[in-house]
Length: 351
Image (cartoon, rainbow, N blue to C red; front, side, top):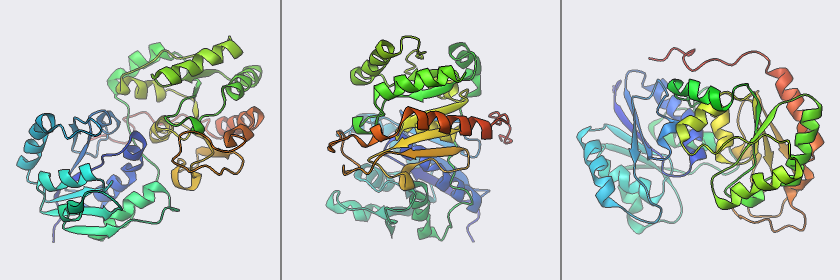
């Protein structure tokens, strides 16, 4: 019986998908505690997984969307082939992940059955499993890919990532005291709570004695959100732009709580153990909201948008129905129920 295989886990989608994959990675570790577990992800996503003590190695792969980039990727592929993996599992099932599964050269190559893609994608794997139903939580859907190897889902579907402990001092300089971090941006504008609501919430929270600080993404559209916020709430605290992912995670780790729409940093915060409040509208909280007792979800009015649309198509933006007063009440409940200090990065017995 195979007891200590060398396994390569592959995920080539988005930031949040990598975090939501971590319960499935734990399931692999639980099934093969003596095995070697590696992860192959895009280089911009690698910092999310690099400090997990039960992962043996994270392989960052250069990526440009829509371009193969063999000159940049082939050295990584060659190094992967020299590892002689016994197994690989592609959790995304897209074209890039399928091709990398084949090129990495593992003897057993597992992947999900996904619609579309190039005609030869099915031949990149030697075992495929049907995609799980879309009404299930995404972490469970990813874990169920492992049914192809008769591996059950993990005991907990809570995500897990770690910040770099070496950056704790730099993070403290940016965020000297724990605060509630409010992330205003999303890659899809229809998943953003209106700036006017953020401004009203800022005033309500300040009156209640809670310390807030705001963040956004680095794009021009996203940066404009904080400009608008400062016009409506001049006293609002805005964190400086932190383009480096490892430092952003270290700062996020210091938060007392995190509030945002359905976006990547929401999953970062949940994976770091920070209590979250997620504001959901066009996307499904049953599929995408953080799992665990420390997390709360607020939903807007019924939405008729496609969950993948970028601009709200309803007469009234569904997230507007979530009031600042509701968010403040939820925040007070979250902070009251999470008063005990959260574990530090090395409290779990890093290897």
